[in-house]
Length: 102
Image (cartoon, rainbow, N blue to C red; front, side):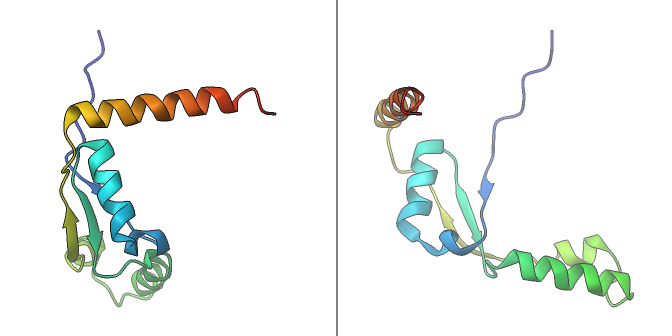
């Protein structure tokens, strides 16, 4: 029998939508898991810069880069389990209904 996966301890977010506090709180509530936003949310550009720096030897390695990551804000779940399950059920029903639209 396969080992069950570890529960999600936190969800780290990035990109433009991650600056929307209401959306990040809603994600934390629906997941029942903290959502963590970094100080630098535009990680595509940051990743390209890190890759270039690694290629030319500016950075010593990935551990050095990982140490640069900083949390800007943490969104803790505030929704009760019953409300969370009700919203998830409504979402599932909406997705199922959308299958017949095409």
